[in-house]
Length: 369
Ligand SMILES: Cc1ncc(COP(=O)(O)O)c(C=O)c1O
Image (cartoon, rainbow, N blue to C red; front, side, top):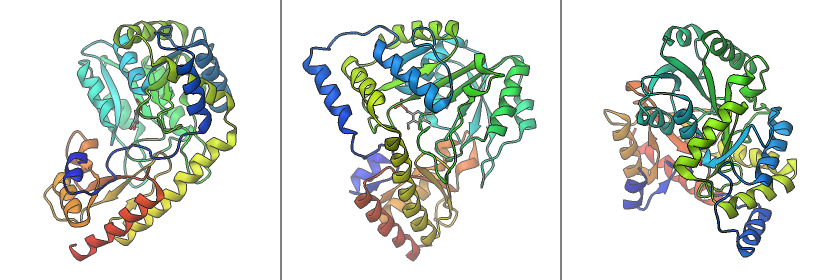
């Protein structure tokens, strides 16, 4: 859709690239690191100061205790963390439960490693799941459940009760709980982000994955991490060493400094800024008769595209682009079968001016549906 959007000079609300300005301390600290000649490999598990900063942050924000020397691996983005966790802990032929609609990289990472995704449904409008359905999927080959909270593309924020149910299933079936929390600071309506790794019953089997792509608006810097019990961390660290050697060193230094120095208000204002953008886009979608499923977190909205002409979501996305100049992702990208054919995903991580223009253009669809 990005390529199609470029062809018509449209506004791209399809890709999840955040346009927010960087916190200045991040730029300064990274420049200092470059000026001081920090051009070389770091330890495979990351710089000491970054692991220390992540450890303090995990305790403060996620309520997870992680020893920076034993339990934390700095990775090449959270994508690198998930890939290496799967590479290290799973074998071809294993199965992992994936909630649908899913984030494409989760599905393709599993498939690339010969791991079979088992699809559990998140039911709109509230994206609830049926614990019995999840349990029925599990076979002797199942090794894990993957949670993404807040979720891309649904915006679902898993509640404590839901996490406890899934933790209980993992315990009873000896499964890993992989949890991608890349949008952990982007939650709305006064909700709190709850890390599954904070549930004491399951702590040892949880692989907590996150990073700074979204929080600091640095998707191209590739700074992520995973936190888990020592033995698993060691194995994931070896896999990360093999695939990436390390995350970029001066960028690790900059992120470490930013984590250490940014006040809580920075993270609160991040959520507040996105909450305003969420409102702007959801109101515009509603007005354009593309009923939005209001997200609880992350920065995407799934909208009902059943009124847009087209036999599938790809045709609908192209129709919308051609009539309005706004690009969205076809819902089929988030489902393994037909589930998403009447959905489109819009990203609101855009500068206000761009978002406002997209919202105005979206109204043009009213003349065609
Ligand atoms: C759910 C989810 N996980 C991970 C990522 C990628 O994160 P990173 O840049 O840390 O690899 C994205 C990016 O869109 C995402 O939506």
